[in-house]
Length: 492
Image 1: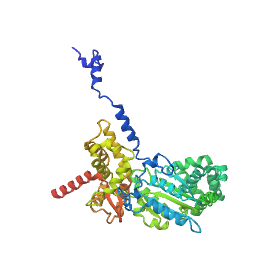
Image 2: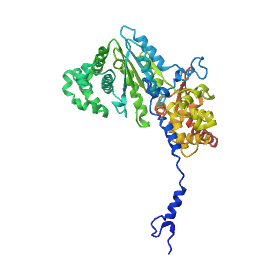
Image 3: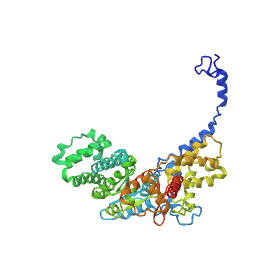
Image 4: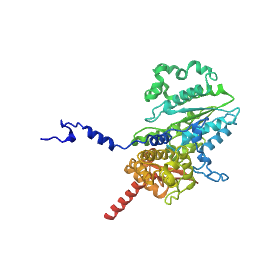
C-alpha cells in the first residue's frame, strides 16, 4: 500500500521539505513595530497597580484628579463625579483635629475594589506633606504584608499587625535617627518584648519566640490562639495597652510633628464566594466592638474597609465619631431605569486612559464612540476600565491600526462572558437594575449582597445620594433572565 506523502515515507508524521516550505509561507508575517507599540500601551494598563502620586515621578503625569474634574471649561466648579470628595473630607477632618488639645482622629475609608482607594491615599499623603511646619509624618501600612486575609482577622491579630506595620513603616519613612530606641531593638523584637510585658505573669504561657512571631501572623490562627490563651478574660484592656503604648512611643519621638497612619488593603480579602458574607460580618463586628483599640492615641488613622461595612453597618460610623468616607464609582450614566449618559464622567475617564494609550492612533476617527462604549461598560470602575482597554489591545494585536468598533465588541463580549451569576446574585441584581436601590433587603439575602459586592457584580454611585446598579457587563445576562422568567410565567 502506498503511504501518503502527507505523513512521510514512514507514516509517522514526518514532514517533507516541500511541506515545511509551504507551512512557512502560510504563517503571517509578524510586524514587530506594531507588536512593540501595543505592548507599550498594554504595560501601562496594569489594573491592579495603584499610582503613587505622593512623590515626583511618572505616576503624577498619569494621574487625573477625578474629584476636581472641570471638563473643558476650567472656570466651572468641579463636577462631582463621585459625590463628596472623600480624600478632601479626610484631609479637612485631620487638619481640624490637629488643633485640638489631644490631637487624634480615626477614619474609615470604604469603596469597591478598583475605585482607586490606594491611589487616593497616596494623594492624601502628598496633601498632608505639603501643609508645612510643624507638619505631619505619614506612615503607610499594607495589611496584606502581614496577614493572608484568606479568612477573618481577629482582634489579637490586628493589634500585632498594627504594631509591627506601624513600627516598620516608621523606621522606613522616618529613619533610625528619629527612633533610636526602636531601631536599637528592632521592630519585631520590640513587639515581642511589649507583648510579654503586657502579659505579665501570663507570659510563661505564650510560647512563640521572636523569630516565630511574624510567620505565625502570616499563617493566621496560631498567633490568635496563643494570645487568647495567655491574655485571659481581660484581653481587651491588655491588647489596647500593648498597641497604644507602642504607638505613643513613636508619636512622642517625632513631636511636634503629628503622626498619620494609613492602613490599606483591609478590604482585600481572598475567600471563596460562599464564605464572603461570614468574613465581612466578622470584619464589621471587629470594628464595631473594638473602637477603643483601633482609635490610636496621638495619631490620625485611616483604615480602608470593605464596602459592606459602609452600606449595611451604618452604626459602625458612630463608633468612630461618624468619620466614614466612601469612594464610589465614577458616574458615567444616570441611575436606573433611564441611565442617561453622563458626559463629564465619560470625558474624565477618557482623559485618564489617554494618559496611557494613544487613543487617536488606536481608534482613529472612531475614538469618541469607542471610548464612550468602553467607559459605560466599565460602570465607572477604574480597574474594570483598565481591564477592558487591555483586552481591546490584546484583540488588536492581530489587526491593523486604527481598529474598528468590532474590536471593541469582541473585547466587551470576552469580558462579559467570564462573569457568572448564582441564583441569589441574580435575584438581587434584577431588583437593583430595575429600581436603582436595594429596597428592603432581607437578612437571608445579606450573603448574596456581600457576594455581589465582593465580585463587583454591582455598582454604587453617589450623586445627591447613594444609588446602585448592576454592572453593565451583565446587561445581556439579566435581559435573558427577564425573558426566561416572562416566558416561564406565560407558559405557566
